[in-house]
Length: 202
Image (cartoon, rainbow, N blue to C red; front, side, top):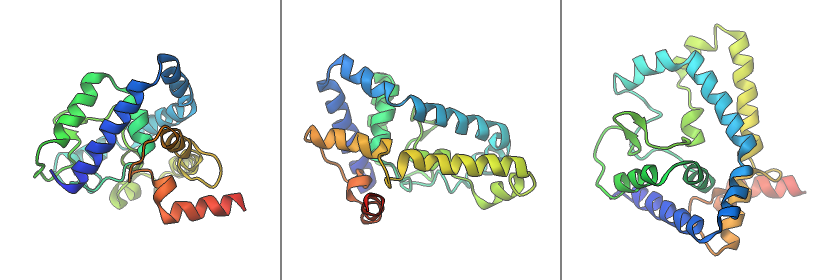
């Protein structure tokens, strides 16, 4: 196992322990708190499907060139592990744990299986990654698509950028208060994001 796999595996197991110890009512409350974020993710998915599916699949995935799916290169927030665990079934989470326990030597992301990403709700950095070639091919020539994409990029910050109370920070805090800690808690560990939080408060 690589250090990346170890870090991801420990966090996934931690999140599953936390979710197993809380009540069903608490789990449902957490899920209800995801409704706006999941609607946003559906909008991003629809945009990607409409504008980028063919070009990205043809130019990158099939030709094994994708920078967005490179090995051990995905930044994953702790909150995303919780969100995925809440929305995925046990079998899907077991598949994630399984791939993390085996030495990964392929050219692609450890989470990328034969049928695509193993995550139920993909990490936001993956979902919203556009390489220069794809961006130029689609957005440069389509001002309507560019305007919509820019709006989605701004909306992403409403969940991830802790200059005010945001979902990713809140989910970290809930688990911290329950006695859990992880290096993936970037809203509480990253010097850059901690500066953003302090500036938002002042």
